[in-house]
Amino acid sequence: MESFVNWLNGIIWSDALIYLCLATGLFYTFATRFMQVRMIKEMFKQMFKGKSSEAGISSFQALSMALAGRVGTGNIAGVATAIAFGGPGAVFWMWLIAFLGAGSAFVEAALGQVYKTKQNGQFRGGPAYYIEKGLNMKWYAVLFAIVTVLATGVLLPGVQANSIASGMSTAFNIDPVITGIILVILLAVIIFGGVKRIANVAQIAVPFMAAGYIIMAFLIVIMNFSEIPAVLSMIFSSAFGAHAAFGGIIGAAISWGVKRGIYSNEAGQGTAPHAAAAAEVSHPAKQGLVQAFSIYIDTLFVCSATAFMILITGMYNVTPEGADPIVNNLGDVSPGPDFTIRAVETFLPGFGAPFIAIALLFFAFTTIMAYYYMAETNLAYINQKTRRIWTEFVLKLVILAATFYGSVKTASLAWGLGDIGVGSMAWLNIIAILLLTKPALKVLKDYEAQKKEGKDPVFDPVKLGIKNAEFWEKEYIPEVPADKKSNNTLNF
Image (cartoon, rainbow, N blue to C red; front, side, top):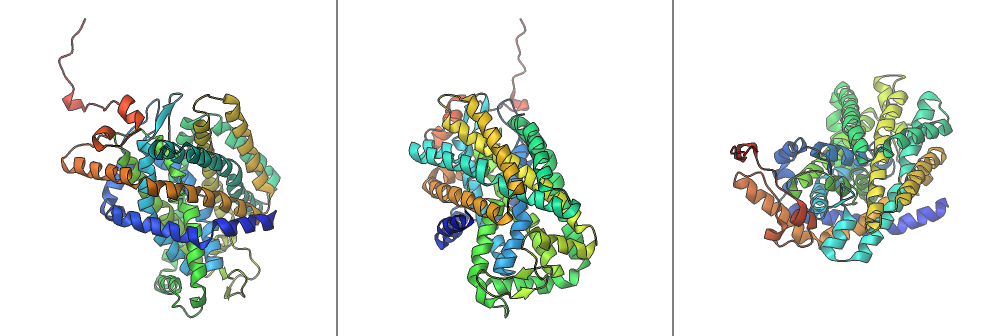
């Protein structure tokens, strides 16, 4: 099984996907005129605007749901794995894919909003919807929906559950079976409560977990402040093959940095548009900007926190695949959470394992919640003509089973299955958003034009020549500002 998974990953995660991700991000960086730099202030403002409705959630809830999917075990174990197989230079390539990926994240989130629909009283949207409505390719949309249900409902939850179980076993000596049972019970309580419950849990848990983790990393960096110049020099020199020790593994640095960067921030993968489409906003660009900023939160803040903790304290090994060790500071230690645990231990002896175990619990559990919502949305797309309630129930049982299975399985198999899910979605979604570049750029241009006129932008797809944006054409009613509402009310 494991050899087959590795073989399949070799095909999906070939150099072609690596370069496609980089090229797509670079293309959107120039096509949007460096939107990820120009509009940072606007991104921050939009995070806290908007409110929820009966059909949709607020911008902040959508951000939290998207971050729940982005900020997971990849931010702890994934960063460590990238360093272990690609060296410190992999961190630079994670940063680069985050910067470039912010452009891709804007595009896919904006498209999710443009082509969203209202099903059974709730906003639904995502790649399957914009592939069908924007490209008129029903078969392609169904293919993406099926792949996503399998990836987020079956393949990916195990990665997160495995990290939680491993952390709990290391820190508190809890049997993985016990951890798996507890995870299943907690997850069942949340996912049987619907999207609103998922959003409510996410908006509380995500900011709390990210802030706590970043604060711990900041304290460790401050305690080792004199090491920062050397660490930065090592990251940049090894990223371009100039470092004496890591110069020969530049290919591994690029490959692992991009792979783990995409796994972590999910830019272009097609996951975040599901949460983005659920938001109640007046213009698709608003969620595009919010989701672009979420890439920075995930990679530049949380992933960097892990990387600096590991590199500053020297708690890492570097052994490229199929090669002899280049750095062996830890002996026979598997790449993953143990690197980060050792880093925290240098600052707070005896506290590393419990801290990372709790961080993984929050990070990974909220990610599994987000995976369920993505799987449910794509199942809703498949069932949009006829609602089959029993299929939703089966999906809940499947993701609960996948969570338990991942808790008790080996880490290597769990990560291999997760990589297949991420890579398959990325291939399908990146091709789709490239084909839909024109309407996405129209959305950004229209938003900026209305902002220059001093307006709170309102989306009109007919005016922009964007077809099949049915919700915006037929159902959306712009909110009238309070100062423009008529005071001449007739009483009967």
